[in-house]
Amino acid sequence: MALLIKAGREAPENWIRAFNAAFPDMECRVWPEVGKREEIEYFLGNELPEGEFAKLPNLKLVAGTRVGVEGLLKDASLPRHIPIIRNTDRQRAATMTGWVLYHVIRHHRRFAEFAANQQARKWEHLQFTAPEKLRIGIMGLGNLGGTVARSLTALMYDVAGWSRSPKKIAGVESFAGAEGLPAFLARSDVLVSILPKTPATNDLMNAERFAQLPKGAYFINCGRGTTVDEPALLAALDSGHLSGAALDVYKVEPLPADHPFWGHPKVAMTPHYSCTGSASYGAEGVIEAIRKVRAGETLTNTVDRKEGY
Ligand code: NDP
Image (cartoon, rainbow, N blue to C red; front, top):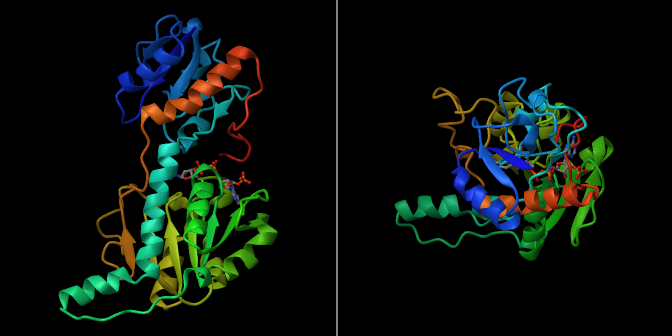
């Protein structure tokens, strides 16, 4: 039994340490040192060169080191019956939550204005809405969005979420599917998108949907840039319908130097930076899945190939 690793940014040794501790009998090999291909039962990584999966006849499980599975799904050589497990890294969820909370609070508590006041040496108490009166909508209530939603309820915000299937999260109003979207948007003073890149989410936030948000709404995107029709977002900011936006992800990354987001006074930007994971936490879910495969148990939380996440 062997695990093939094609690590992302993190050193493979960090992953190997975690897997050796959990499975002393499992050999870890680092791409491109595949060795005997028939011995590879598990793959950890975000992609392989086209056609390589087909050369692993005893592959039983695939896991990404990142959350997005676009790189794995585009490879037709990855047999459809091989399960891809979803990333449930606690550290990613925690760091993503910190990024979202920062932007919600920066907007709600008017910290950009305080920064300007400090420059002007102006002493002024700016008013802010009671948190329970600020309606926050989270698009995507998975590992990341669910953690963000729970943290916002702890800060007394009025939180709702939108997902494909209805969810039960204490203190979070659930909206689901296309039929739930208009009412969800209409009650979102702050809209946070933590949706995956799929055909169904492509350009979801277009001119029509931005118009369904309350006037003065604030938009936050840390899911994927493909969810947003960027010219429509710029138009909604410039018309004053949106009061601002905090963006971490873009249609084209790195964002081209001449993109209007860079210099836009209403846009706060980071370069695909909102969360981070590490092998010690990322390995937890992979170890659990390998244990289940070895015990012949059914895997839960696997990627739905048809839906693309
Ligand atoms: P999950 O798969 O756990 O959750 C995805 C959520 O999106 C689910 O609640 C799902 O609904 C919902 N969803 C998917 N498609 C639709 C749709 N068409 N309509 C309504 N809801 C939909 O993913 P994570 O929470 O772990 O991650 C979410 C995304 O965040 C990733 O796919 C990735 O693209 C992005 N990301 C961004 C990072 C960054 O640095 N900016 C870092 C990490 C991830 P349901 O629950 O009903 O299935």
